[in-house]
Length: 122
Image 1 (cartoon, rainbow, N blue to C red):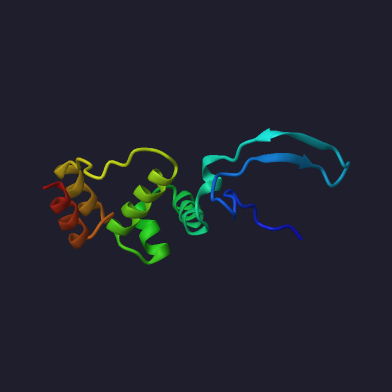
Image 2 (cartoon, one colour):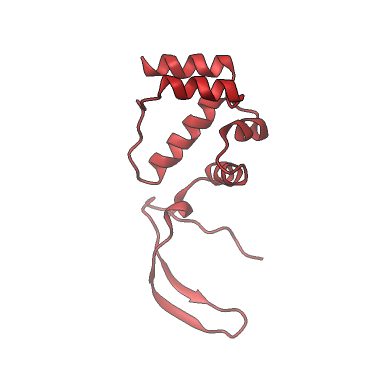
């Protein structure tokens, strides 16, 4: 039975590095300094959200349904993950009013979400 990998030191909280890889089949061992991917540093909840987001092919309406959360909450979770991966978040994203209307017409968002998006723009 294997344990989930930890990415931060339990003593000082600094990022850990992998120093040894071992094959349980042929017993080959490779020692070096390996780095984790950016995704490895995400919390389990964030990884689950990414899995759902990908399964829904980025369709926010489907993510809303699957997780039972609102459009602004989905966007907020995406922003949190973007920041956690080390990228700058666009807190004040410019949303085209025509795009909001189109999303509303297609049923991708409801009227309440459209109003929230328009208010964010102000």
